[in-house]
Image (cartoon, rainbow, N blue to C red; front, side, top):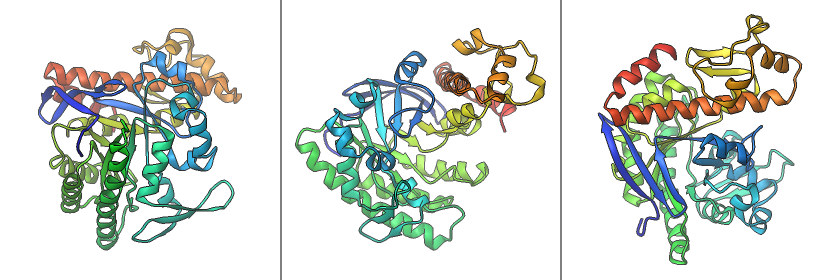
Length: 372
């Protein structure tokens, strides 16, 4: 894609793992980078000021939900997502495709027809309308509409998803090119599919690169398949994707999977895991996953993670936070979410530092020893 508003600057590499800087019209993103999911223009249980204090660089917003409630027209009238949410950092919007396909919609070669989970109303989404909606939302980076097949699926189903994703990518690029000619500084990422079939993954990546985008997403993984199937499929894609552009693995945020993906050259990640875990009392720690509801924490005066430097660990005990969890005090969702986001951000920062220092394999082994 001509006149790319994004510029990926490699800083260091250690094997396939890499650290870099992604320059945008809004600023710079240090990679690897984890992006919290702000489905409805907010990361659940926390606010934009919290995210700023955590040093979050990018937030992901969900096109599907925002186009239905409050509606793209409302967001646009209120100044776009940044003004609407009071967030000055980067925003990436997905196309809504993953949520649409989880609803088993009617899919044809032109697009997809689905019903709203809010009121049952019927809606149509095409590659072109996905571009237009995300443009009106005002994200810094938008994603093409793709076809995400469930796993496991037959080779025929995955093949059809790859073909439609490639066709829709070309249509989205054409629609987006017109907006760029009109002066848009947004970026558009293509997406490759292919299930866990390595040959189809490589083919999909090749066809997506042939269209040409500002960066590249890898979709349709971490949807239930075991890691020993996910990683070879991911490697088949990253081997094809351009080394001088950003690579984004969609929907992966478990500590082990994230670090393994960094080792395969991935730059960007998003996942609901740290926030969903936080709301339900599951804590990410240097010793592994902790269930705050377990009785062993009833009288514990230890922080959630003794090696964590977050504000929650500096102030509150496990015993106190367990009490809040057990009486369903809403405050605990915010506190545990803040800790989990800080912890995962530190993990990604440590992965970047390991690449910079040339010790990524040792770091990967350390994480693998704690996280399955």
